[in-house]
Length: 266
Image (cartoon, rainbow, N blue to C red):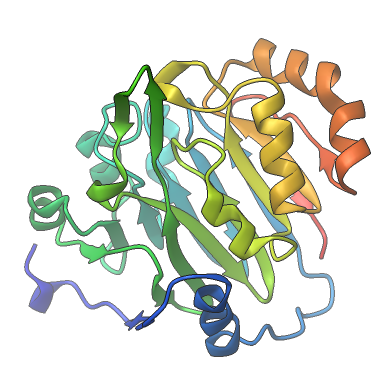
């Protein structure tokens, strides 16, 4: 579908920064001053398969990395679909098409040029922001890089500029890390996130064990939800590491079964 046939109300803000660092994210917070949520405002987070989630709030529905959706989800179309990177357990064109409506905005890392063209999408790089209705979506860094005996292993290389996402709903911020390890850039958003969704490993060089705890210590969110794992492993992880998480933060760990939901009341 061409852009002329698919109306989209989108504002893209590219944050221009001469020197990257803590000040980089300060630019974002100044551009997006949180508003007070309306009375009885709720945010419903549904964990889908693998790293997929659905966020419903303020009359909007946003999907991140949706795959393996039951056919019933065709009756729950998206206002926005966010894709972190092109690996098959995060991007599948069938499910993006299932969720489309006339005004759906599909957002991809900028180097996914073929997929952007296929889905009439929007390409972004880390620190770009897209406004969809009243919800601000900011791309953030996402990569894995491990060195062993001077050999680099990077199934998600930094230079690809693949993206995690921060979804800001009336000042309530949800961070979806995609496939990422405990990267140094998390220091720039420490204490700014309400909910962090972090991938459990060891698959795809994601995080595992105390590395997840260290990432939570760095991010200092209010809530942590494991993704990119099975129901059983999520339950075991939360049971095994809750004490360590609460020793290093005020974060509340929550595990949500696939295709089940949790309601946040900011």
